[in-house]
Image (cartoon, rainbow, N blue to C red; front, side, top):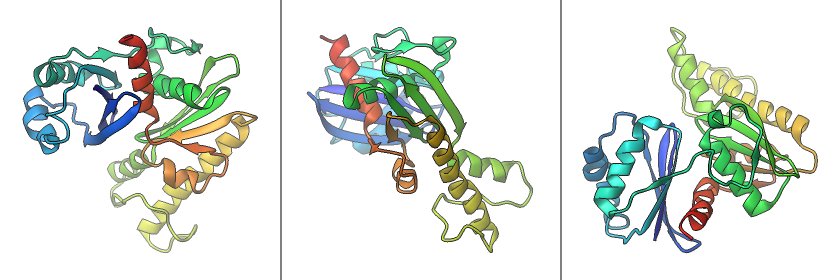
Length: 250
């Protein structure tokens, strides 16, 4: 079986594939200070029956947290006796990367763009709604043109709390009214409804005949409010890693 690992800024997502089928998936919180022992015997122990006892023969990783790369590699070697392959911009993603320099385009953005093209065709616009909100564009010739990066909703909420004296941290949820009559409702209106408006406005400027694909933790919420999004694919990054592994291990 294949283990695909997507190391993001907020969470580390694990997907176990039996051929093209996603057999099992789960996520743990990202902590840049994880040790290999902590991951193996603390965080991953919770998933022992579904995870550690499975026969993993291949492992592929996309990471935007370099501090954890060697830790994840050690975990894979210790638990599964496999050395993971780490995807970067030098892999054949079927895209002509026009970003400058290509190495500064987050591998999560590139894998998502590769997966969206492979699954839904080109041209396409790929939105990821997580720690950051990113919107990336691939044209009909397969050129990865680059895109847009903005703070995600959680980042915005935390920044308001950290950089002000009296504003609280609020859980992300859609408020009932545009005009809030409490501080919490006012913050949610600005962050959540403001985010909807930003995404809607940006996509209205970008979208022509491109298919718009959304992924990430807030994709369902945002797509329910932004009718320019055509597809929500929660497993886009894991599927992209699976398809890249099929090439790498062929």
